[in-house]
Length: 319
Image (cartoon, rainbow, N blue to C red; front, side, top):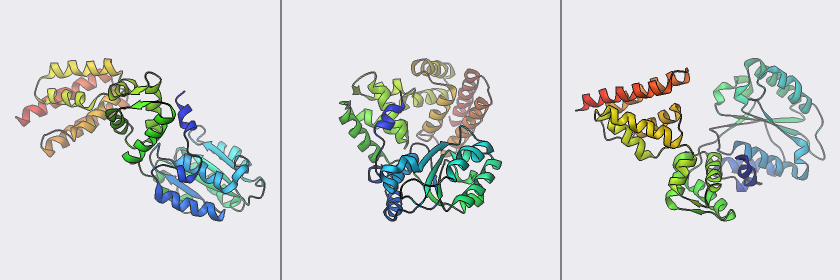
C-alpha cells in the first residue's frame, strides 16, 4: 500500500524533481545532447536518486525508454550471479530504436560483494560502447576504486524543508487533504530530509483522517513527540528514575516504538537539553553503547532501563 503514492506522485521529468537543482541542471545537459557517461548517485534514502535516473532515461529515450532502461536492485541479489546473469545479458544486447546505448540502473549497488563489483567492473569496460551504468549508493566509499574512477559522481543531499512542504501541499491538494501547520512541521521533523518517508507518512495518516494533524502523524508514524522524549530524559537527569521508567513504558505502549526507535529519538533530543556540552558528550556516549547492545540482540527493556539509570547518575553529578 505504502508505495502507491510514491509511484503516483513520482516526477515524470527532470524539471519536476524536488530539491536537487544543481544536480538536475547537470543531468539536463546530458539529456539535451542525448549522451550519458557512467554515473554514480550517492546520498541518503529518499533524496531523488531513483527518480532522477528514471526521469533522465525518459528524456533521453522518449517513447522507447522502457526498452532501453533496466532497473535492478543489488540488495536483492548481492553476489556475482546477478552480474554474470541479468546485467551481462542486458548489457550485451543492442539498444532499441534510434538509441546508441542503453542504461542499466543498479540500485543499492553498495550492497554488492567485492567479487560482484570486480565482475561489474569488467562488464562496464567491455560493453561501454552500447551500455551506460547508473549506480545508486548510500555510501560511495563501499564501491571499489576502479568503478568509482569510471563514473561521474553526483552527491544527493537531504531534501530541504521548504521543498518537502511544497511537495506535501501539492499532494494534499490533489488528495483533498487538510494539513495543519503543526502537521506540516511534524512531517518535516519525522522525515528529516527523506521525501519518500514524508510521502509514506502522509499516506498512512490520510488513511485514518482527511485532516492531517501533528497528533495524528505521531500516532500513525510510530514516533514519539519530542517534548515527551525530553520530559523522559529530564526526569532521569533529575534523579527520579522510577518516574522516567514509567514514562519510558508509556512511550513504548502509546506509540508502539521499538528500543532502537527510542534510542534514536533520545539521541536527537540530547542536543536540545540545557546542560553543559561535556554532559551531552557523556550522554551521547552512553546512548551509543546502548544502541550497540540492542543491535547485538540484547533485551531492549533492560538496556533502556540501564540507560535511564546511567542518565540518573549523570544528573546527580550535575547538581
